[in-house]
Amino acid sequence: MAHIRIACLQSAGHPADVEANLTELDRAAARAAGQGADLLITPELFLTGYDIGDAVLRLAGEPLAARAGELARRHDLALLAGLPERSGPGLANRAVFVRADGAVAARYTKTHLFGELDQRYFRAGEQALVLVELHGVRIAPLICYDVEFPEAARAAALAGAHLVAVPTAQMRPFTFVAETVIPARAWENQLYLAYANRVGAEGDTHYVGRSSVAAPTGELLASSREEPALLLADVDTDTVARGQRDNPYLHDRRPDLYDSLTRTDR
Image (tube, rainbow, N blue to C red; front, side, top):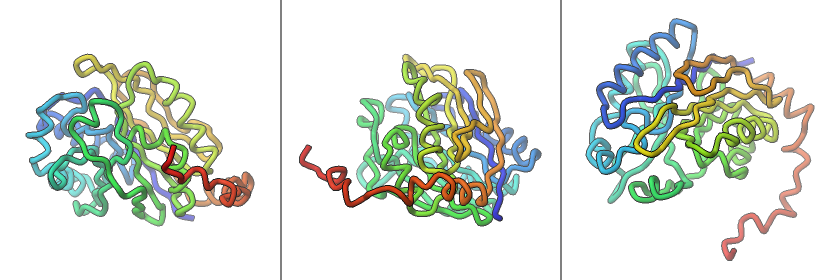
């Protein structure tokens, strides 16, 4: 059996203040590592802020992934850090997986852009699935709106993911996504799902918090409301294997009947 302990940071962050966000991440990483965590997941675009207007154009040019790597190495802890990066002629909204030695192991780019805030600044990713392994546990990152599409989490499950890790900036009035959709995604795919959200507000955007870690049963192993928090939960591959055996959604599905899901004419 492979096993890891994960931590989810729920925070308001500091809009457009990279140094303050790195300081907060440093403290959270120290706390998480002190409680035996192998991986710390941040909210979406945590190192810069999400609703920060044109400031993201400037901040995306900073070496944010390298700075996250320094913290990972300092605390001997893997990070899944939400940050913007330049990508060709535009920007990418990314979850960057940094190993405990500080090396970047994977970059996932948000594939489903939500509303004006995303679409104004970012280009959608074209790679639906990124898998990274940590101590034998296979992890698939998604970002916020991505997990609201059932196909995204299902693709991760079919690729053998044990954990879907979701940096998010879920806002009002979509509290039901955090409370209902997230445990449902874990249950219907028989895997763990970690959801690390923001709290507080940036401009007119008010975040709903309610970060959680859901087990393959849909049970919440850790959860929060609208206050800053650091959630911890244990993930193991045996629980995923047992869940997929006892609740065989993946085995019993009928992909030959689902051709309409890939049609682009509607």
